[in-house]
Image 1 (cartoon, rainbow, N blue to C red):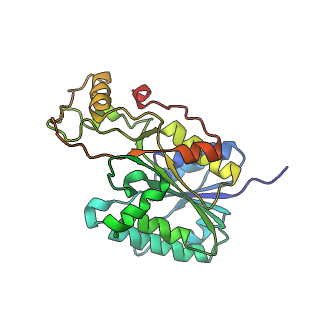
Image 2: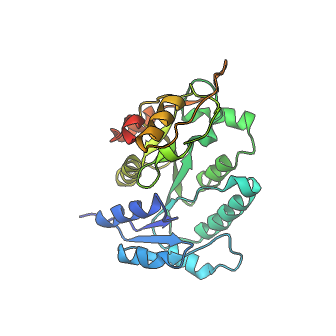
Image 3: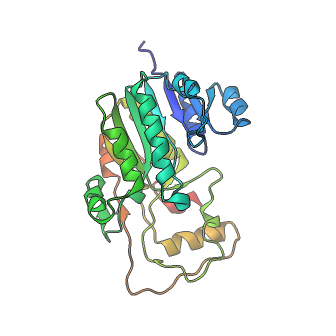
Length: 275
């Protein structure tokens, strides 16, 4: 029987923790990072080797990071906080991590990204449409971070660009409840359920689908108005209202490449079933 790869998961939060738990159940040895001391015990109890790693702390222990990266696969799951400084500190953290990776045994990287890398092109959007991001938004923080890990001879990297994340304690009915005169009510939503996020990441690792870029969104794309009205109603919250607009700006994310390459069938193909 082939040995399961040792895996390090950078960022054991909403997505990273259940992924780590699933990989442990599958027989992998899993390292998990957290920036919270109390979370260390949570990881330990789940059979995950816990590491306290905070790349935003200039005094972080480099030896701990080195030990954390003793694995064959790194799942990089740190969403950027763009509102504070436009992503500058995030790119600094990614630079620190990349340098540490060069001295590690990691040979495969799974980079969890977002469909926010794409501009609103008012049509179906595929993985190749980052060419428009290069033209319209050349300083896009997330795309810079993706390429930082794609461009290396030391490892191969697969990027998964998730749509809006929903499931577990993320209830979309709370996102816009009570808000009024919202724009783009007729724009399609690009959402994905936690269960599908986990299924896709596990399958990429199991099938060794490296050196790829995949979009990952549910098959159906109801309008923002229909989705968020229904989501608020499901929680008995104040229903949001949307402006009547002559022009709608949107992108409709296609996950066809992922479905073809991985033979993946979404557990939640319709976001209206999230509610």
